[in-house]
Length: 407
Ligand SMILES: Cc1ncc(COP(=O)(O)O)c(C=O)c1O
Image 1: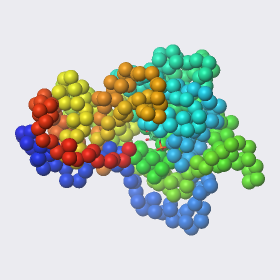
Image 2: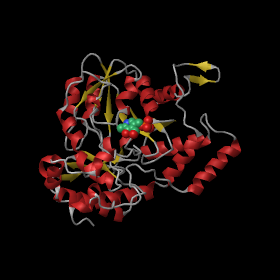
Image 3: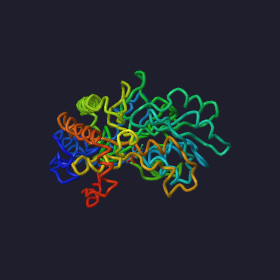
């Protein structure tokens, strides 16, 4: 428990945690089940190319997502590229800037120009009114992002896409197994992409998938993920290699088995952060609707009220061995790779305020309570800390770079 500023690790006190906490520390699941599945794959000598584990994984993911098809891939970035290509996207595609850089990069990599739209600052989700205002004759599709597992304009975006005859693809990297009003989010739009990266809710070491009800789109995506082949000696599409391996599927299946335990821990952690930080001036933890997988705990800090900026709070937490994430700063439209993108006021303001906090099965209730104590203490002394920073008082942050964390 910190009593004075000198107790903060940044001012020389002992760090609150001897073992670091991280955002996105992988949920592991039952090792025995994983090793059994790996043994089976080795015994079969069938390690990739749509083996039985990949097919079982696809069936289970399609089942929980309410879609006819799940096309498993080696990551979500390639699934986005294949989805966009298979849906005929070229020219310009409208997408949010407040997302992980994989969203625009995936499409940019295949020659599509991302047109960035702003967000609703309350939810951090794409603003559908702004989307509609950006549609031009060059627009060939809309890429929505179900950020933090929340439904991205679930009524208006499909309506806008239908009105303009545009395909609607959703980046649901954060939204595996999520629902909106009881309906799986993967049933919105024409197709949805999941990520099964190690840090995600369901992990396959690395992995992704395209979900759709469209038989033709699924068949094209299946071919494209495997060099465009539709038969042993038949190539019907331009393709790439985006296949999921049996080892990844073994981990993915094991992770699906562990979902109830993971969601229970996430939900408990999220609830604890909400209650511990309720009423702290200038601090807001995003509340999520029922049906979210609670993979993320997202906090905003308003420097005008607390005196301390998000970056200062992050530096303080880092020295306490609490590794947080400044999601997604700066917005993608501010990156050197997207020069000349118009300014997006809400995205820019939110990206200065957001901190992703540690959660998942590697983080206990007691640890959340202790993290919140540090946040409350920092905010209570925010103006004093800011004054010290302005006067250049020694703080260990300058000597210690922010630790790299899993994303
Ligand atoms: C919103 C979003 N889209 C896409 C991706 C890319 O996923 P993958 O690492 O599976 O390629 C991520 C990964 O973190 C993400 O957060």
